[in-house]
Image (cartoon, rainbow, N blue to C red; front, side):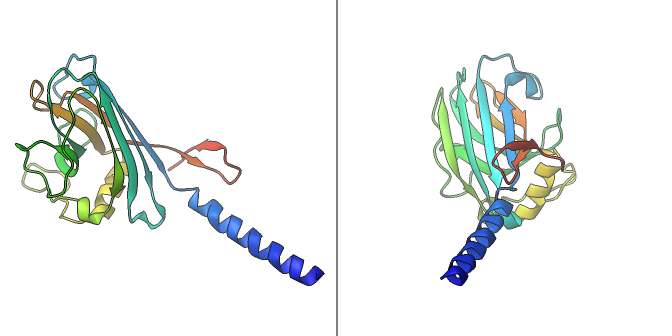
Length: 188
């Protein structure tokens, strides 16, 4: 009986350690405001992107929220570029009928909205060309995750009044959970 109890304790310990490794997944965050846009936009609108890069870098669970937009929302997505530089679209959150987005992209909501889901390689669209510093092919999620970890990706929301984007925020790896459930600053 004691041997069976000890064996069960060892198995439970192994599962809890394996689960603790899953808690090391990077947490992503971006605060979207008009002053981050290029050129700067004066707006009361705000937004937030939150995400988690899942173990094995095979997907990103995310939520994008926005409110107070002054124009009608036309599209929202992730671009690759450093702060203060406009970059190419690699992942779509939402679109309107006028936007040339991948099939299955949800329709944007006006004024305020919230979109949640899981980004996989199937969601990555190609960007390229002479003026693009980082070439990304369709499906190359690893390149997108590498850019996010390097601080070279941003989320933004476009409107009919600010066609280049009304609010924007650079995506940052902000923290990880340690084994006891407390949050620690990420050191990547």
